[in-house]
Length: 260
Image (cartoon, rainbow, N blue to C red):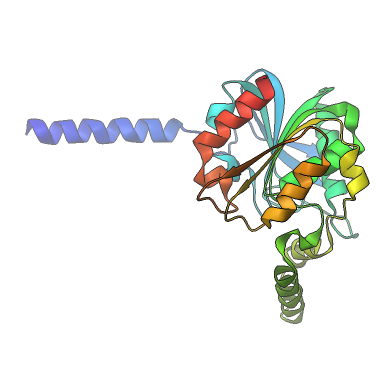
C-alpha cells in the first residue's frame, strides 16, 4: 500500500510539473504577433538579459528550440519567432520567399521591441537568415551562431538539389499546398551569398555543424574560412539536427560565445 501511494504521489508530481512546462511555440501566456504589411509574425519572449533571437529551419517553428529555450532564457532575453509562412506566422506576399526577406522581418521585430543590437542563433535556414541579417544590417548585430547553414544551394550537394527540383515538380503536378512548394523552392534558389559578402561581415560568428550534417563539410569550412575571425566547431556523431541531438552542448557553446 505504501509503495502504491508513493507511485501515485510521484505520478501527480510529474503531472503538475509537466502541466506547468510552457509549450514553446504555442504558449498563449507570452505569444504575440507582429503585424506587417504582408505577414503576421508570431513570437514568444522568455528570460532577461542580452537579446538573443532564435531562428528555426525550413518548415519548422519555435518548437524546434524547446531544448534550448529553458537554459538560454536563464542568461538572455530569448526572442523565438516563427519565420513567415511557417509555424503560426502567415505570409500574403506573392513574390518568391527569400532569406533577405526573412532578415527584414527579424529587423522589423527588433525595431518593434526597441532593440538596437541583437544576437542570433540560427539553425539551418535560420542560420542562412542570420548570415543575411549580418550582411544587410551590420550595425544591428553583435554575435551570430549558425548551425547547418549554407550560403548557396549546392552547399547541400548537387544531388540533393537535383532531388529537391524533382520533388518540387512532383508537388506542383499533384497540386500540393502553395506554401509547401514555395518553401521547397526557396532552398532550390537560395541563398546566393557571395565570397565578398562573407568577407565583409563584421559580427563575431560561430559556425557549427554535425560531422554527418546535411550540409557538406567542405561548405561549412568554406563559410568559416571566409567570414573574418569566425570560429568553427563540428559536433561528433551528429547529423543536421544539432539543436536536438546535442542540445546541452549547444546551449553551453552559445552561452560562452555570447558572454565572452
